Image (cartoon, rainbow, N blue to C red; front, side, top):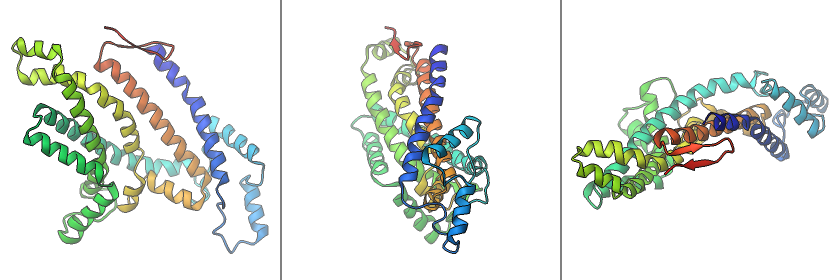
Length: 314
């Protein structure tokens, strides 16, 4: 296991370099530049600004300078934030997006596993139909539509919750609910299918034949083995939620990374775009690595080798 984890960690550098190269090339292929909105700047001033930031150099040289700074932990500066370091700009949004994402992840995982397990244990009953209906609605209604419906209901008509912002428990209710709707439905459907597959296994029948309490059978034998497929989808879902939702953060005026990323794209703020993309990549890599490690914890039969291969002992 240790050799496998070390090997995966060593691959982070090359993967980030590849993502940085592709993002850098695509970003500079988009028409426009960071100073296009500065209509009052004369051509001489624009030339001086481009020279100051190195934007007048060939593309390969610009990327070389950026890669050299990146290797030293320097993400550059933000053109649109008074030359603030990109790390500072992202640091402000990371805390907000991470808090929002972790709250949504905790809610969606708890509710999704509970709904899916209940639906499987009460198959073809009222609880099953209700859980499937909730999962279908959650998967079908986009998060921004659900967010707008909640704004109209709980803010415009009932006046229970504030319309946006971040910092209080009331301000977090609607964004967390809107952001966690789809993951809850997805996790519930995966959990239901996995529990139904495990319910009729021999070891479950043996556990019940031994006279174990139903709660012990569900927790120790059914859920533990049914969580493997859930962990598979939990990695990408966690990365998506923790890195922030562009639409939800815009809709509820939340100062997170998603909102900063959208603003940076519209302003051609190259440093923020590159920094945000690399951070998203790093979160996805670490989330997938964490899921692989959890495999071995949940299922002792899973073993990893240094050759990045998975072995299941039977």
